[in-house]
Length: 413
Ligand code: SAH
Image (cartoon, rainbow, N blue to C red; front, side):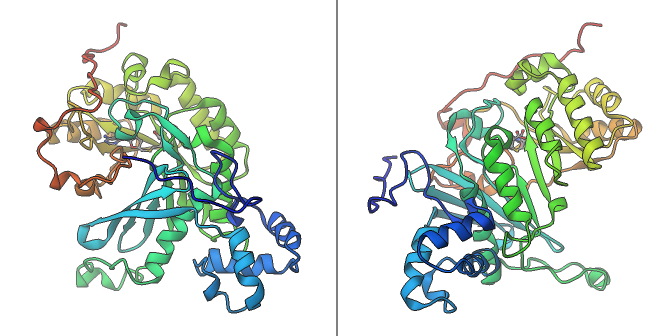
């Protein structure tokens, strides 16, 4: 698809090539005060603008009736430039799952997914356009990295989701059975959880991601006021960055995309394993758990006959037993051109049973968003019909055929 031209901007406000325009969500409150002062406005305007963006989810000057008419456009133009334009919206699960394809100022495409459940609303956000980690079973990994998203571009995805909820555009979904109603608080019409599990490797865009975590979790007007404990940062296992994150003083959940307990297989499923191997990645995870007191989530996509053998479940169980960890099994979601499929139900049940027999807590992730290519590993950011509207995989040309490893035997003793 041809990229649109970079929008014209007046000199002085023109973005540096490759860099999104500055937005108030890129700055802390002191930085915002300095920016409004530079425009000849009193510093308290920074708080007013911040409340509009983080508290009311608006960036339109017309909505800012507490600002003098004469300064509204200049303030909004300088500190609330539009960053992402919705290119396509797809819904499933009765409207409670919504995937949005966003176009950035330079034509870069990213996706975010909102999932409303009876007791929470989770936003899955992208941290990069594309991804450089090249995991062969993940659609995002196939096209490579385009660029890092700015802090404000990440935050803008969550604010957009919050606005949809506030506008009543996401239905509550089916009500729980009457017997359980009294125990369930009414569904909040706000974003309660954020997972950095969209496109990109968050820890490869470290500073902007940590900036986004702070903006999302600082109280209004500094930020959006989401609880740090409800934010999850997922990584392929960039060991030095995990160490750095542990020292940030944040209580966010760390998720590690392990997918194999042995280096032979993990070298092929998560290529960065050749740099930081399973033992090092898990050491970094246990350090994270010790420093933050937070249970680490171990992500494991179950791939039929590739990583779902009983002996691998036992090996994984023995590596995790006694640690502050929890395994999130993800039935493999289909991606274009991949020959791999999800494990048989019997293999999945046995995998769960063996992990539990090691005393390791385990859950199986739901596959929300599959029909709209919005589930884990399916975000590829091109405006195209969802899987349900495409011809079957067998008749489509694989864009990037991934050859599965043949490994299916235990490592040599
Ligand atoms: N790069 C980060 C953030 C992406 S999170 C990371 O890898 O952790 C997306 C999660 O979905 C990761 O655990 C990823 O490994 C997993 N995933 C990727 N492709 C998948 C697929 N086809 N089916 C199921 N899970 C997949």
